[in-house]
Length: 120
Image 1 (spheres, rainbow, N blue to C red):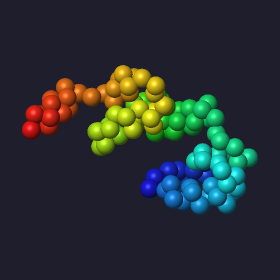
Image 2 (cartoon, rainbow, N blue to C red):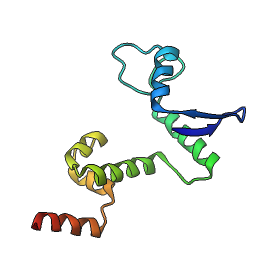
Image 3 (spheres, rainbow, N blue to C red):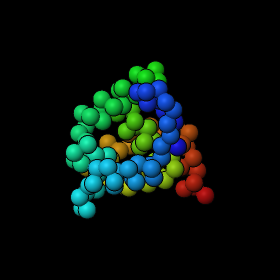
Image 4 (cartoon, helix red, strand yellow):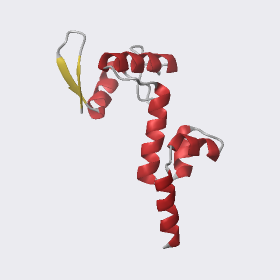
């Protein structure tokens, strides 16, 4: 759950489950629409809109955050939890596995642990 202050400065909470319900009733997406976040008109939001939203919220919370940092953070956390480069490569839309490796920020200690697991 995420708490935030709205423009009226009231504290509000939301979860992805709440948004799913609101999405279905407010935006009335087409039955074949597989995009999660939609505009008021029911169309997928653009990359530019996402970037502006991230920058606005980052500024509000005083955090140096970009969409690109979020992408790297997701990739690193996903890899640490799942240890599946092929699935991560597909999720990130990379054609070259080397690019996916760059995104994961794997440290030396994690590489040593991987080697130790293979040796056992």
